[in-house]
Length: 457
Image 1 (tube, rainbow, N blue to C red):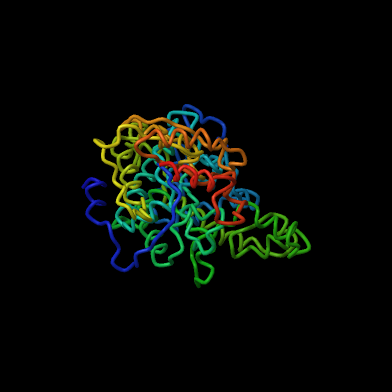
Image 2 (tube, rainbow, N blue to C red):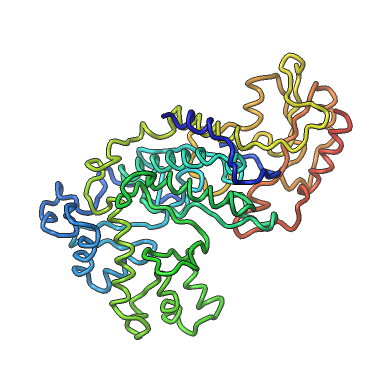
């Protein structure tokens, strides 16, 4: 069944109360280029000597393969695979691996695990999560996850991405000034949980499939499993959290103690073992959890072209259907807050001239939010509007900060048009990771611009 046919038939969640959301609209550092022939672990076709290793034997179960691999590694080699940029083991045919890739609303180029410098120069950029979640459509959430993981698999097949993605962000958006709220499904725990389940199923391909085989591995962030007992998976620290524990928060006196304190969270280092804070058995337990996930992903199964999803190639990225799914997600997520005078929808026959005003009316990167990849195409609000009606554009402000405005030009344009579309708001210079908003007002002179344009429209 087509993703679009499936999601259009399921647009509401009966168990989630309707919310009135005020939303920013979102339409939709690379690593070195991969070689033309990337290396894959246990590629017995290129290196027949690997066939004798138990961890390369796909006929064994995951536990047996992991046990065989761990016993062959030195302590240094085990620790080398417990950090973000894992060091390969050339003597066993295991390449380097970067655990950090992102996929909040498409495969991202943040983290270094994915790059767009080779056969896959771009991907499908879906709307930012806060918009998609406003559709309340579980089928849509899962359909997007399926497309994102398909495009991720394409990139893995050509050596341009890993298979472990630090997505989705399921923090509850409690304070609307929080700079990362755009990444989340919103303030409602029920909607957030339903989004997380559906999106993860879409990413991992585990809906009715074999739980021992993952399409990609998702990571729900942040602090989502801290009260789960007997968790038999690995936990991912934030990028520099172990260092921060020692260097900034001064929670421990030495780096080794910080590593030891993080042991149950999957953080290890050779110094901590030598200092006696942890032992090699603890390291074995932790690395076994990591390797078990890579086994389920097929990382140790050789050339992915000979595995499930091996037929996926660049032709499966940014397809017509994927682009239409992104467009449908934007349609379903748009929220109309007020239409007091029945002005909407515009009548194409009545509107002959349209004034498009605002600092966000003709921007590209702003429209796709943070943690994005390289979209196959940008369409600004202005570009979309001029395809339907004759439109004239005026920024009104130099940028979203709007410390300098050209209100006279904007009001003159508005007075001469049949209708006006104002595209206001913020961008990543105002709110983002590490930068929260100080208030909820439109930045600078944006409100003044809106007020003056409204007077003459």
